Image 1 (spheres, helix red, strand yellow):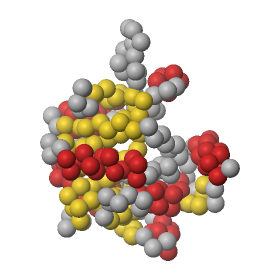
Image 2 (tube, rainbow, N blue to C red):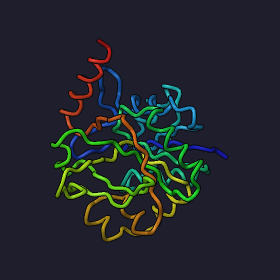
Image 3 (cartoon, one colour):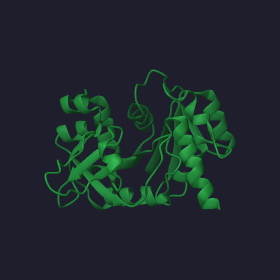
Image 4 (cartoon, rainbow, N blue to C red):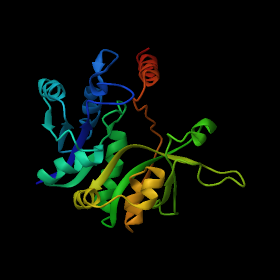
Length: 242
């Protein structure tokens, strides 16, 4: 049985950026950036792109990777990851966002290590300190608070904690690292009240009474949702190369 299975959901349709996985960034398709980033991890045993698009399957297979066609009606990336995980046994499942071209082993490996070392943890996510006041106010940035042992207390699109005095803010970035049975259980459960209110899937896990372990990182990402995100990513990469 595979120890750690990384699944990259890649839905072709996008309300804001049609055909997003195949959009080229610095001359290379977005989904290839993600796939290559995940393959850097020595703790990942198998990488699968889960998609509803034959063009994406052929692109990944031409690059030497593995892609699986999934039903087009699956509503979310988590559902697509669970569909693949159910049919491909493993111990751990990484759900890597298909629009995150900056994902690296530095993001993946610490979460997998937590799952191996802390058996009570059902889900591990990354926590990045927020340095920009603008990010604190943006509802597209998921803020998070956790206890002294880095166990999640809450996630919100609103600024948390409320800053009556000076506060430190953290945001969620990057992949989700699941125990396989936890992902399958999550996908089989109905959406919970707080999850519906905030439109945040992590709250379904917390409302069910399970442990989410937050793992601090200093690595940030640029998720590709708009043409402006494409420009931001290419500007960052051009700066690195120069």
